[in-house]
Image (cartoon, rainbow, N blue to C red; front, top):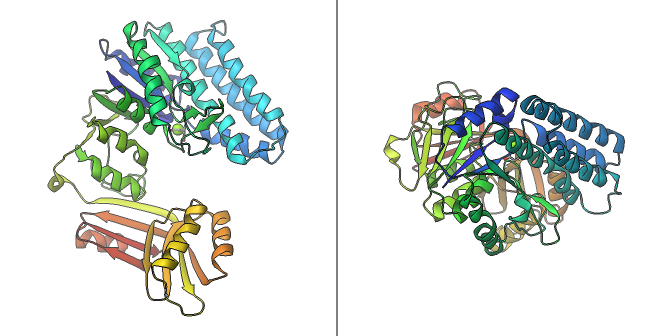
Amino acid sequence: MKVFKFGGASLESVERIRQVAQIVQAFPDEKLLIVISAMAKTTNELEKVAENFFLRKREIAAQLLYNVEQSHLNVAEVLLGNRQHPVFIQLQQFFTEAEWTLGEKPMRQYDYYYDQLVGLGELLSTAIVSAYFNSIGLANTWLDVRDVFRTDDNFRDANIDWAYTQRQVTEKVAPLFDTLNIVITQGFIGSTDQNESVTLGREGSDYSAAVFANMLDAENQTIWKDVEGLKNADPKLFPNTVNIPEISYGEVIEMAYYGAQVIHPKTIKPLQNKQIPLLVKCFLDKNLPGTVIKETADVKRLPPIIVLKKNQVLLNITSKDYSFITEDKISDIYEIFHGLKVKINLMQNGAINFSCCIDNNPEKIELLIKTLHQQFKIVYNEGLELLTVRYYQTGLLEELSNGHTVLLEQRSPATIQRLWKK
Ligand code: ASP
Ligand code: MG
């Protein structure tokens, strides 16, 4: 059994969906659990539907939903040849459910409505791909992952109930392979015990696939992307990037932690725990070697790994009355950050101050400042970038830093981080 994950870029157009089918056809004797995310930028469009609904701009929300509906119906029609196929009834049901949500008065928190609306993208894409695959002889069954992935009600970042979900996978998903080779299901979504839809965090389909791989004891998991494999830096930001043929779980988790947008950070743990290799491969050319992520990989063969996080803010928190910022105060500060779900990307402390770098989220920063300013003086600096280089070499570092004013720096033998202003 293998787990495949196809993301939005691989479903961007009819041609790409056909390419996905060709990849799957290249594994004729394999049992495949295929996790699919929403097509192209659908999730972003649905986020706008949710925002407008919550702001009670119902007509705009309905119009945006209609656009999503039409584009999906068109893709399905081209792939299936007409609109008579039963999948159109299924698609209509999904739209009707979303329209019902739009008809409600928003009485609950935003994140709840977000999850009821935004997960639609995955339901649509999987239904279309499943119907198309069946129509070209790739016999498969469509699975509603919300019947399998049970979570808590931490909307937009729901946590999987591992024991319950494992039971569902063993009892409901594994037996599907007795009669079929392919099961197609959604990434990114799940459901609470009240049957409310949830999402697992943006880009969460990689993680969904890893949960399945773990629970089905898969031989490996492949993430099919539009790039060659994992690179040592984002090619959109840096010239001369190189492909990494082999890398350890630990290294990838660090890269993701520092902000590399390669793989969802939660993906590694379920795979590492069962020693399931993760392959990153290019769906445009499946013969390219790609990257293998596994327990041990030769660190000496790794190039310097560069991650740049943009739109950062430096917060300087200083005690007003000159009292020391020691463990007790730091724990208060962390409590506040934790309460507001603000992640600290880099921190440093001195006698009476604490500096940290966080993503620029104006609403959260305003709340942070409001809460902190009773005890502390706050100065903040925005428009910054956080550079992280693993296995750095001095020449490269100076080249990268050229023309920037460094505001904070931290280094260990393996890693350097510089927060700078352009
Ligand atoms: N469609 C979701 C997103 O764009 C999940 C994913 O792509 O993994 O965030
Ligand atoms: Mg996506």
